Length: 255
Ligand SMILES: [Zn+2]
Image 1 (cartoon, rainbow, N blue to C red):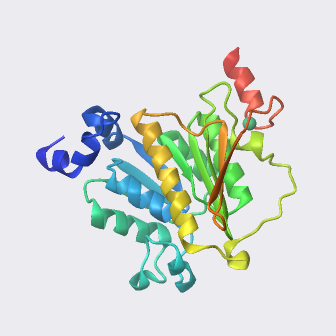
Image 2 (image 1 turned 135 degrees about the vertical axis):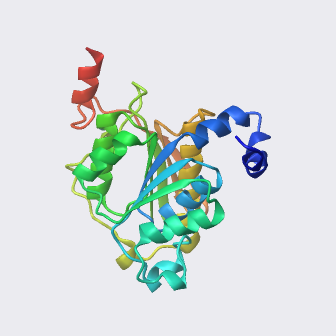
Image 3 (image 1 turned 90 degrees about the vertical axis):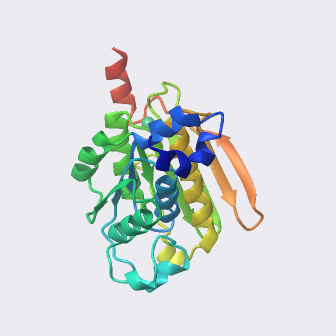
């Protein structure tokens, strides 16, 4: 770390839990962010300010006026610009020291397989069940920790799915892929603006903890928020022995 970095990250370095070693781990890390919308905006900005050395942001959408109510990585001048590129510019405007790769592509299985393999942590900031399952499958296949958040209306949830921990569930253990899911999208249901900020920031916090190797992650615990009452509920989520995604792979690695 040079003098400039020591100054920029001084308030992190002052933390006993983090220190120079932890900050160095962040600078050497690569985070993959799926989605540059309401959750991905604060997640990318905080990972950028915190000095995560390399970030890849995947989103195939372009910025629209209706996004600006909550997607804080974008602004009026970027309407029509791909969200991944807009988020990249916003991160670099704050911290030009970090590398940000914008991928204006749909997060399909092939792309995810390639990108997850290169990442140290994955943040699912997407907005649909199919993408969440595809991100989880890639994370299980490559044994990468997944920080998944979701928010709609006034309700939100966040957790960490980390199959490196033998007792911890993957996303599909908790939300089975074959389950009939009623997709509720922000486009039809609406979403309370700061709710995505709260959850995206929480995702950034969990990702930074995982990368720096500090604290205890949310693995095995699902954190839920009802913003109407601002009540947090946390439930234990066990792994499913018959999970179609992680169970076969865990048996393979156990042998
Ligand atoms: Zn599973």
